[in-house]
Length: 403
Ligand SMILES: [Zn+2]
Image 1 (cartoon, rainbow, N blue to C red):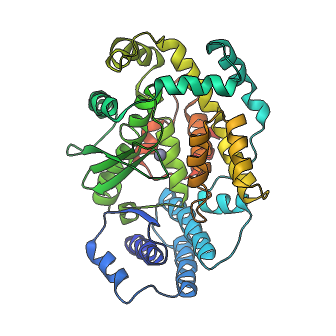
Image 2 (cartoon, protein in one colour; image 1 turned 135 degrees about the horizontal axis):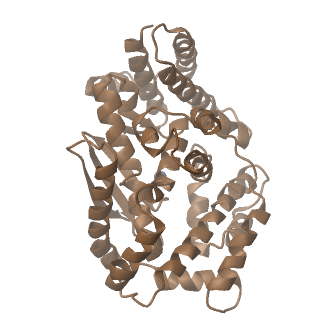
Image 3 (cartoon, rainbow, N blue to C red; image 1 turned 180 degrees about the horizontal axis):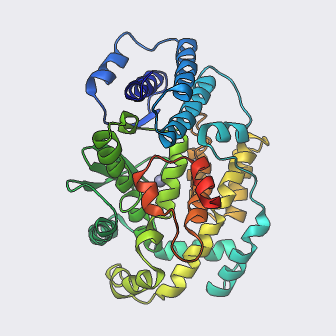
Protein backbone atom coordinates (compact mmCIF):
# COMPACT_ATOMS: atom_id res chain seq x y z
CA UNK A 1 0.00 0.00 0.00
CA UNK A 2 1.30 3.47 -0.84
CA UNK A 3 1.07 6.70 1.21
CA UNK A 4 -1.62 7.79 -1.28
CA UNK A 5 -3.86 4.77 -0.73
CA UNK A 6 -3.61 4.26 3.07
CA UNK A 7 -5.55 7.46 3.75
CA UNK A 8 -8.36 6.44 1.40
CA UNK A 9 -8.55 2.93 2.92
CA UNK A 10 -8.73 4.47 6.40
CA UNK A 11 -11.58 6.76 5.39
CA UNK A 12 -13.51 3.94 3.68
CA UNK A 13 -13.16 1.74 6.78
CA UNK A 14 -14.45 4.56 9.02
CA UNK A 15 -17.43 5.06 6.68
CA UNK A 16 -18.17 1.31 6.84
CA UNK A 17 -18.10 1.30 10.68
CA UNK A 18 -20.45 4.27 10.67
CA UNK A 19 -23.00 2.06 8.88
CA UNK A 20 -23.17 -0.09 12.04
CA UNK A 21 -22.96 2.76 14.51
CA UNK A 22 -24.48 5.95 13.05
CA UNK A 23 -22.74 8.93 14.62
CA UNK A 24 -19.38 7.12 14.73
CA UNK A 25 -18.27 9.71 12.23
CA UNK A 26 -18.83 12.96 14.01
CA UNK A 27 -18.11 14.88 10.85
CA UNK A 28 -17.38 13.87 7.26
CA UNK A 29 -16.32 16.33 4.62
CA UNK A 30 -14.49 14.05 2.20
CA UNK A 31 -15.51 12.83 -1.29
CA UNK A 32 -19.28 12.33 -1.44
CA UNK A 33 -18.95 9.25 -3.67
CA UNK A 34 -17.00 7.35 -0.98
CA UNK A 35 -19.87 7.96 1.42
CA UNK A 36 -22.46 6.90 -1.18
CA UNK A 37 -20.49 3.73 -1.94
CA UNK A 38 -20.35 2.87 1.78
CA UNK A 39 -24.13 3.29 2.01
CA UNK A 40 -25.02 1.03 -0.92
CA UNK A 41 -25.65 -2.62 -0.12
CA UNK A 42 -26.16 -2.08 3.61
CA UNK A 43 -23.69 -2.65 6.47
CA UNK A 44 -20.88 -5.14 5.79
CA UNK A 45 -20.37 -7.98 8.33
CA UNK A 46 -18.38 -6.85 11.38
CA UNK A 47 -15.85 -9.76 11.25
CA UNK A 48 -15.07 -8.75 7.66
CA UNK A 49 -14.44 -5.15 8.78
CA UNK A 50 -12.24 -6.40 11.65
CA UNK A 51 -10.12 -8.38 9.16
CA UNK A 52 -9.86 -5.35 6.90
CA UNK A 53 -8.78 -3.18 9.86
CA UNK A 54 -6.06 -5.68 10.82
CA UNK A 55 -4.78 -5.74 7.24
CA UNK A 56 -4.72 -1.97 7.07
CA UNK A 57 -2.85 -1.77 10.40
CA UNK A 58 -0.21 -4.13 8.96
CA UNK A 59 0.02 -2.11 5.76
CA UNK A 60 0.48 1.15 7.70
CA UNK A 61 3.24 -0.42 9.81
CA UNK A 62 5.16 -1.42 6.68
CA UNK A 63 4.24 1.17 4.04
CA UNK A 64 7.35 2.67 2.44
CA UNK A 65 7.67 6.41 2.22
CA UNK A 66 5.08 7.15 4.91
CA UNK A 67 5.96 10.15 7.05
CA UNK A 68 6.68 8.82 10.57
CA UNK A 69 4.37 11.26 12.37
CA UNK A 70 1.59 10.36 9.96
CA UNK A 71 2.28 6.65 10.54
CA UNK A 72 2.02 7.21 14.33
CA UNK A 73 -1.30 9.06 13.90
CA UNK A 74 -2.85 6.44 11.61
CA UNK A 75 -1.61 3.56 13.80
CA UNK A 76 -3.21 4.92 16.96
CA UNK A 77 -6.43 5.88 15.20
CA UNK A 78 -6.64 2.42 13.68
CA UNK A 79 -6.16 0.71 17.06
CA UNK A 80 -9.19 2.74 18.20
CA UNK A 81 -11.20 1.57 15.17
CA UNK A 82 -10.27 -2.04 15.96
CA UNK A 83 -11.39 -1.51 19.56
CA UNK A 84 -14.70 0.00 18.40
CA UNK A 85 -15.23 -3.05 16.17
CA UNK A 86 -14.66 -5.35 19.19
CA UNK A 87 -17.21 -3.37 21.20
CA UNK A 88 -19.69 -3.46 18.33
CA UNK A 89 -19.28 -7.26 18.22
CA UNK A 90 -20.45 -7.40 21.82
CA UNK A 91 -17.13 -7.73 23.62
CA UNK A 92 -16.94 -6.17 27.10
CA UNK A 93 -13.71 -4.50 28.15
CA UNK A 94 -12.55 -3.16 31.50
CA UNK A 95 -13.25 0.58 31.41
CA UNK A 96 -9.60 1.64 31.82
CA UNK A 97 -8.54 -0.70 28.97
CA UNK A 98 -11.37 0.53 26.78
CA UNK A 99 -10.25 4.13 27.30
CA UNK A 100 -6.57 3.27 26.79
CA UNK A 101 -7.21 1.46 23.48
CA UNK A 102 -9.77 3.93 22.18
CA UNK A 103 -8.08 7.14 23.29
CA UNK A 104 -4.38 6.46 23.91
CA UNK A 105 -4.58 7.66 27.53
CA UNK A 106 -4.94 5.37 30.54
CA UNK A 107 -7.27 6.94 33.09
CA UNK A 108 -7.05 6.35 36.81
CA UNK A 109 -9.21 7.21 39.78
CA UNK A 110 -8.53 10.87 40.74
CA UNK A 111 -7.92 10.99 44.49
CA UNK A 112 -10.42 13.25 46.24
CA UNK A 113 -7.57 14.71 48.32
CA UNK A 114 -6.64 16.66 45.16
CA UNK A 115 -9.89 18.62 45.53
CA UNK A 116 -9.08 19.85 49.05
CA UNK A 117 -7.41 23.09 47.87
CA UNK A 118 -10.50 23.91 45.77
CA UNK A 119 -12.81 23.39 48.75
CA UNK A 120 -10.56 25.60 50.89
CA UNK A 121 -10.52 28.40 48.30
CA UNK A 122 -14.27 28.25 47.75
CA UNK A 123 -14.89 28.35 51.46
CA UNK A 124 -12.76 31.49 51.65
CA UNK A 125 -14.26 33.26 48.61
CA UNK A 126 -17.97 32.39 48.59
CA UNK A 127 -20.50 34.26 50.74
CA UNK A 128 -21.31 32.42 53.96
CA UNK A 129 -24.10 29.89 53.87
CA UNK A 130 -25.07 26.35 54.63
CA UNK A 131 -22.90 23.64 53.02
CA UNK A 132 -20.26 24.36 50.39
CA UNK A 133 -22.47 22.55 47.90
CA UNK A 134 -25.36 24.91 48.70
CA UNK A 135 -23.11 27.97 48.46
CA UNK A 136 -21.85 26.91 45.02
CA UNK A 137 -25.44 26.24 43.93
CA UNK A 138 -26.43 29.72 45.11
CA UNK A 139 -23.61 31.27 43.08
CA UNK A 140 -24.62 29.32 39.98
CA UNK A 141 -28.19 30.48 40.30
CA UNK A 142 -27.01 34.10 40.29
CA UNK A 143 -24.74 33.57 37.30
CA UNK A 144 -27.09 31.54 35.09
CA UNK A 145 -27.76 33.07 31.69
CA UNK A 146 -31.10 33.34 29.93
CA UNK A 147 -31.45 32.69 26.20
CA UNK A 148 -31.84 36.47 25.67
CA UNK A 149 -28.56 37.18 27.47
CA UNK A 150 -26.83 34.46 25.45
CA UNK A 151 -28.01 36.02 22.16
CA UNK A 152 -26.68 39.37 23.27
CA UNK A 153 -23.29 38.21 24.56
CA UNK A 154 -22.26 35.49 22.14
CA UNK A 155 -21.80 37.75 19.06
CA UNK A 156 -19.44 40.12 20.86
CA UNK A 157 -17.41 37.29 22.41
CA UNK A 158 -17.34 35.54 19.03
CA UNK A 159 -15.96 38.70 17.35
CA UNK A 160 -13.14 39.27 19.81
CA UNK A 161 -11.97 35.66 20.10
CA UNK A 162 -12.05 35.23 16.33
CA UNK A 163 -9.90 38.31 15.87
CA UNK A 164 -7.38 37.14 18.49
CA UNK A 165 -7.24 33.64 17.02
CA UNK A 166 -6.87 34.78 13.41
CA UNK A 167 -3.99 37.03 14.44
CA UNK A 168 -2.14 34.15 16.06
CA UNK A 169 -2.96 30.96 14.17
CA UNK A 170 -3.12 30.08 10.44
CA UNK A 171 -6.89 29.95 10.05
CA UNK A 172 -7.94 29.78 6.39
CA UNK A 173 -9.14 33.06 4.88
CA UNK A 174 -12.64 31.73 4.24
CA UNK A 175 -13.87 30.37 7.54
CA UNK A 176 -16.89 31.11 9.65
CA UNK A 177 -18.92 29.97 12.59
CA UNK A 178 -22.66 30.17 13.11
CA UNK A 179 -24.20 29.79 16.58
CA UNK A 180 -27.66 28.24 16.95
CA UNK A 181 -29.72 27.43 20.03
CA UNK A 182 -31.09 23.92 20.57
CA UNK A 183 -32.77 22.03 23.42
CA UNK A 184 -32.81 18.53 24.92
CA UNK A 185 -29.26 17.34 24.23
CA UNK A 186 -26.85 15.40 26.49
CA UNK A 187 -24.14 18.09 26.05
CA UNK A 188 -23.93 21.84 26.73
CA UNK A 189 -22.58 22.88 23.35
CA UNK A 190 -21.40 21.08 20.23
CA UNK A 191 -19.32 22.12 17.26
CA UNK A 192 -20.44 20.60 13.97
CA UNK A 193 -17.74 21.17 11.38
CA UNK A 194 -19.25 21.14 7.91
CA UNK A 195 -16.18 21.38 5.68
CA UNK A 196 -14.84 24.34 3.69
CA UNK A 197 -13.98 26.17 6.90
CA UNK A 198 -17.58 26.39 8.14
CA UNK A 199 -18.89 25.26 11.52
CA UNK A 200 -22.27 25.33 13.16
CA UNK A 201 -22.11 25.50 16.93
CA UNK A 202 -25.18 24.36 18.81
CA UNK A 203 -25.77 25.78 22.26
CA UNK A 204 -28.11 23.73 24.42
CA UNK A 205 -30.26 26.23 26.26
CA UNK A 206 -31.67 23.45 28.50
CA UNK A 207 -28.25 23.04 30.10
CA UNK A 208 -27.08 25.47 32.75
CA UNK A 209 -24.80 28.06 31.19
CA UNK A 210 -23.07 30.62 33.38
CA UNK A 211 -21.74 34.10 32.65
CA UNK A 212 -18.34 33.23 34.15
CA UNK A 213 -17.90 30.31 31.73
CA UNK A 214 -19.28 31.81 28.53
CA UNK A 215 -16.02 33.17 27.09
CA UNK A 216 -14.41 29.82 27.84
CA UNK A 217 -17.26 28.03 26.07
CA UNK A 218 -16.87 30.10 22.89
CA UNK A 219 -13.08 29.59 22.99
CA UNK A 220 -13.57 25.85 23.52
CA UNK A 221 -16.02 25.32 20.66
CA UNK A 222 -14.80 27.92 18.20
CA UNK A 223 -11.77 30.19 18.62
CA UNK A 224 -9.13 28.80 19.03
CA UNK A 225 -10.70 25.43 20.01
CA UNK A 226 -12.62 22.85 17.95
CA UNK A 227 -13.59 24.95 14.93
CA UNK A 228 -10.09 26.40 14.61
CA UNK A 229 -8.42 23.01 14.80
CA UNK A 230 -10.75 21.37 12.28
CA UNK A 231 -10.66 24.24 9.78
CA UNK A 232 -6.85 24.40 9.86
CA UNK A 233 -6.40 20.62 9.55
CA UNK A 234 -8.99 20.43 6.77
CA UNK A 235 -7.20 23.07 4.69
CA UNK A 236 -3.56 22.27 5.48
CA UNK A 237 -3.55 18.52 5.95
CA UNK A 238 -6.53 17.15 3.98
CA UNK A 239 -6.68 19.62 1.10
CA UNK A 240 -3.12 20.93 0.67
CA UNK A 241 -1.05 17.94 1.81
CA UNK A 242 -3.48 15.34 0.44
CA UNK A 243 -3.80 13.54 3.77
CA UNK A 244 -7.41 12.49 3.29
CA UNK A 245 -7.63 10.90 6.76
CA UNK A 246 -8.26 14.45 7.98
CA UNK A 247 -11.54 14.76 6.06
CA UNK A 248 -13.44 13.21 8.95
CA UNK A 249 -13.56 13.13 12.73
CA UNK A 250 -14.19 9.98 14.73
CA UNK A 251 -16.15 10.03 17.94
CA UNK A 252 -13.97 7.45 19.75
CA UNK A 253 -10.29 7.90 18.90
CA UNK A 254 -7.05 9.41 20.21
CA UNK A 255 -7.76 12.51 18.10
CA UNK A 256 -10.66 13.26 20.51
CA UNK A 257 -8.26 13.56 23.45
CA UNK A 258 -6.05 15.92 21.49
CA UNK A 259 -9.09 17.96 20.40
CA UNK A 260 -10.52 18.23 23.92
CA UNK A 261 -7.04 19.05 25.25
CA UNK A 262 -6.76 21.84 22.65
CA UNK A 263 -10.28 23.06 23.46
CA UNK A 264 -9.93 23.04 27.25
CA UNK A 265 -6.69 25.03 26.94
CA UNK A 266 -7.99 27.26 24.13
CA UNK A 267 -8.82 30.35 26.13
CA UNK A 268 -5.46 30.36 27.94
CA UNK A 269 -3.74 30.25 24.53
CA UNK A 270 -5.12 33.66 23.49
CA UNK A 271 -6.34 35.58 26.53
CA UNK A 272 -4.12 36.26 29.57
CA UNK A 273 -5.91 36.31 32.93
CA UNK A 274 -5.57 40.08 33.38
CA UNK A 275 -7.32 40.66 30.04
CA UNK A 276 -10.09 38.24 31.03
CA UNK A 277 -10.61 40.24 34.22
CA UNK A 278 -10.56 43.64 32.48
CA UNK A 279 -12.97 42.52 29.75
CA UNK A 280 -15.48 41.01 32.18
CA UNK A 281 -15.36 44.02 34.49
CA UNK A 282 -15.72 46.59 31.71
CA UNK A 283 -18.11 44.93 29.29
CA UNK A 284 -19.38 41.39 29.87
CA UNK A 285 -20.66 41.61 33.43
CA UNK A 286 -22.29 45.06 32.95
CA UNK A 287 -24.05 43.88 29.76
CA UNK A 288 -25.57 40.99 31.70
CA UNK A 289 -26.68 43.33 34.48
CA UNK A 290 -24.03 41.89 36.82
CA UNK A 291 -21.71 44.90 37.11
CA UNK A 292 -21.39 44.36 40.88
CA UNK A 293 -19.35 41.14 40.39
CA UNK A 294 -15.64 41.23 41.21
CA UNK A 295 -14.08 39.81 38.03
CA UNK A 296 -10.76 38.76 39.57
CA UNK A 297 -12.54 36.92 42.35
CA UNK A 298 -14.91 35.20 39.90
CA UNK A 299 -11.99 34.01 37.78
CA UNK A 300 -10.28 32.50 40.82
CA UNK A 301 -13.49 30.67 41.73
CA UNK A 302 -13.98 29.46 38.16
CA UNK A 303 -10.44 28.06 38.03
CA UNK A 304 -10.87 26.36 41.39
CA UNK A 305 -14.11 24.70 40.23
CA UNK A 306 -12.38 23.39 37.07
CA UNK A 307 -10.16 21.26 39.28
CA UNK A 308 -13.21 19.25 40.29
CA UNK A 309 -13.65 17.85 36.76
CA UNK A 310 -11.53 14.92 37.93
CA UNK A 311 -14.60 13.73 39.82
CA UNK A 312 -16.46 13.11 36.52
CA UNK A 313 -14.21 10.22 35.49
CA UNK A 314 -14.55 8.80 38.99
CA UNK A 315 -18.30 8.87 38.48
CA UNK A 316 -17.88 6.82 35.29
CA UNK A 317 -15.79 4.25 37.20
CA UNK A 318 -18.49 4.10 39.89
CA UNK A 319 -21.28 3.68 37.35
CA UNK A 320 -19.68 1.22 34.95
CA UNK A 321 -17.11 -0.62 37.02
CA UNK A 322 -18.20 -0.60 40.62
CA UNK A 323 -21.90 -1.29 40.14
CA UNK A 324 -23.12 1.96 41.71
CA UNK A 325 -26.72 2.97 41.02
CA UNK A 326 -27.37 6.24 39.19
CA UNK A 327 -28.65 7.82 42.41
CA UNK A 328 -25.36 7.02 44.21
CA UNK A 329 -23.37 8.46 41.30
CA UNK A 330 -25.50 11.59 41.47
CA UNK A 331 -24.72 11.90 45.19
CA UNK A 332 -21.02 11.47 44.49
CA UNK A 333 -21.04 14.18 41.80
CA UNK A 334 -22.94 16.55 44.06
CA UNK A 335 -20.68 15.95 47.04
CA UNK A 336 -17.26 15.90 45.38
CA UNK A 337 -17.87 17.72 42.08
CA UNK A 338 -20.17 20.28 43.80
CA UNK A 339 -22.67 19.90 40.96
CA UNK A 340 -26.34 20.71 41.28
CA UNK A 341 -28.77 17.82 40.97
CA UNK A 342 -29.70 18.87 37.42
CA UNK A 343 -26.05 19.12 36.35
CA UNK A 344 -25.25 15.72 37.87
CA UNK A 345 -28.21 14.10 36.07
CA UNK A 346 -27.17 15.74 32.81
CA UNK A 347 -23.66 14.33 33.18
CA UNK A 348 -24.90 10.84 34.09
CA UNK A 349 -27.04 10.88 30.95
CA UNK A 350 -23.92 11.80 28.94
CA UNK A 351 -21.88 8.91 30.34
CA UNK A 352 -24.62 6.28 30.23
CA UNK A 353 -24.64 5.46 26.52
CA UNK A 354 -22.53 2.26 26.05
CA UNK A 355 -20.59 3.57 23.06
CA UNK A 356 -19.93 6.99 24.59
CA UNK A 357 -19.36 5.95 28.19
CA UNK A 358 -15.61 6.47 27.90
CA UNK A 359 -15.70 9.90 26.20
CA UNK A 360 -16.04 11.68 29.56
CA UNK A 361 -12.35 10.94 30.23
CA UNK A 362 -11.13 12.90 27.20
CA UNK A 363 -11.67 16.30 28.88
CA UNK A 364 -9.72 15.80 32.08
CA UNK A 365 -6.91 13.72 30.58
CA UNK A 366 -6.73 15.80 27.40
CA UNK A 367 -6.37 18.95 29.47
CA UNK A 368 -3.66 17.43 31.65
CA UNK A 369 -1.80 16.32 28.54
CA UNK A 370 -1.89 19.69 26.77
CA UNK A 371 -1.26 21.70 29.95
CA UNK A 372 1.77 19.50 30.60
CA UNK A 373 3.09 20.30 27.11
CA UNK A 374 2.51 24.05 27.40
CA UNK A 375 3.66 24.48 31.02
CA UNK A 376 7.12 25.53 32.00
CA UNK A 377 9.21 28.65 31.69
CA UNK A 378 10.47 30.32 28.51
CA UNK A 379 10.00 29.40 24.85
CA UNK A 380 8.71 25.88 24.41
CA UNK A 381 9.95 23.81 21.47
CA UNK A 382 6.39 22.57 20.92
CA UNK A 383 3.36 24.73 21.49
CA UNK A 384 -0.33 25.21 20.92
CA UNK A 385 0.17 26.02 17.22
CA UNK A 386 1.70 22.58 16.59
CA UNK A 387 -1.39 20.93 17.99
CA UNK A 388 -3.58 22.96 15.63
CA UNK A 389 -1.53 22.32 12.51
CA UNK A 390 -0.07 18.81 12.81
CA UNK A 391 -1.47 15.30 13.18
CA UNK A 392 -0.66 14.46 16.79
CA UNK A 393 -1.48 11.67 19.21
CA UNK A 394 -1.40 11.61 23.02
CA UNK A 395 1.69 9.36 22.81
CA UNK A 396 3.44 11.97 20.68
CA UNK A 397 2.48 14.77 23.09
CA UNK A 398 3.92 12.74 25.97
CA UNK A 399 7.17 12.33 23.99
CA UNK A 400 7.31 16.06 23.19
CA UNK A 401 6.67 16.93 26.84
CA UNK A 402 9.56 14.77 27.99
CA UNK A 403 11.91 16.07 25.28
ZN1 LIG B 1 -15.09 19.84 23.34
